[in-house]
Image (cartoon, rainbow, N blue to C red; front, side, top):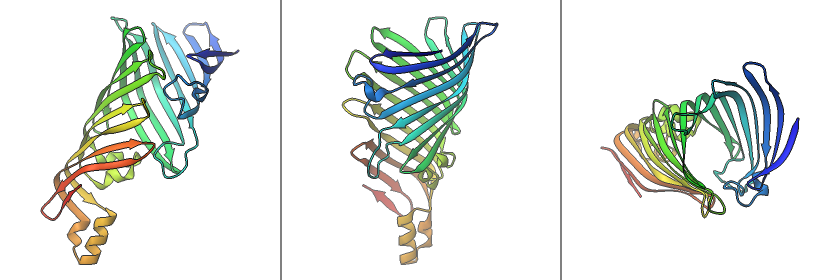
Length: 273
């Protein structure tokens, strides 16, 4: 069967099949077009989203496996905005806990996205999100998961009383191995240390990502500028620099990508700006 309907002014298409045998089994596909709605938080960025999954309903728990494909509006120039993304998940469970909060757990999954024709990948496992409905139109989502030999924790605030719907979040990463993040962004692997970060996100008045990064007990390697200085002035020590602490602030939005308040001090070099 196939159904067409609107949810929060977003056109959706739902198709699939349901088996009422024990256990109840669902095979479904869901497509939506946020770009055709002015009130959804991603309408200016996401062109289309498609989800396919196979699931079972047992003991009031929905267990699914599947994937989500996202297509974004075409962007011009050197932008960090993704062109497309794919999320593949395994053992995604949804249920309500004893105090009627909605709990989502993911045993494992991969998020692959492309910017400027470059592939980036984030792997997750043992991810948990707990949604609390505080009052009409307001929700808080608490997230937690192991993250690349460290920890990820955070909160997301969802306010549908505003137009467009406002989404803000604060995510904290603690003691993450930068070498393991090479698939996400190869530049992380150049710092060879343990990273912590506070990441703020909002979609109002525009999508904006900001925060800070601190790397402890690191080793800076294969940095193009320092390689050039080392070769030009006969300073091979600059090609691999051990440091106790390095830090920076960052801002990412559709207008610019900016690092500031950079601090890196070693016995051989000091970087600040």
